[in-house]
Length: 281
Image (cartoon, rainbow, N blue to C red; front, top):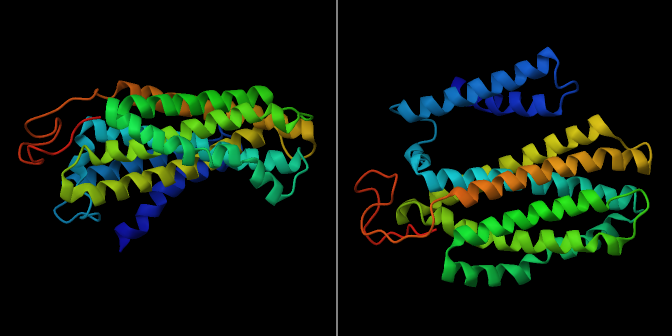
């Protein structure tokens, strides 16, 4: 029971440090340090324990370079994307003067675009591999957030924001389906459910960190006092989000390119994957 109580503390120390005031204060720096040390210690324990707390998650799958890379990229992608969406929806309401429903409808070019781009991205990934498609999708998201940062002002028309919305939507559509296929292609078929669950959990953690960190940047640079003050905080937060997604694109670009293997997947012990297991990315 003690181990189960300590697990949330490992995550909570780091998340609390992100949202606390005064990033250079001793409590905040201590929170970052404590959260990092506890998380590293938890992972090391899980790798060596005879009866680990997470017996359903074979930690060896994280030794596969492609599996670790796509999960790290997914975390950064959701960090930038969810943090930005959280602030941009408030921008449309606070600065644009729209109601929550009106703001949601105006976000549709971003959130609904994957219904169009997703199937096309899936077909393209079948032809050239998922790695290049995911890389381009993340890069488009980074560009879209950069366009948002350049376009937002206290007085700006909705049409001026449409290019950023559309670019982000296309990028998001190019990311989802191919990235899931990349995750599945790095593990044995019987472990695909475990790998999918791990990837979903990592994405959710990235989204939570994104909302916390970008909101912290926003609070440090601006606020809700006026439209100008809101934009002063929003712009640097968007650049941080764009940087996180750009780093995700770089990680995806550095993953091994598509190949066919007759034996076990690279990075897994012999016998871990059947000869016909898909390892192409």
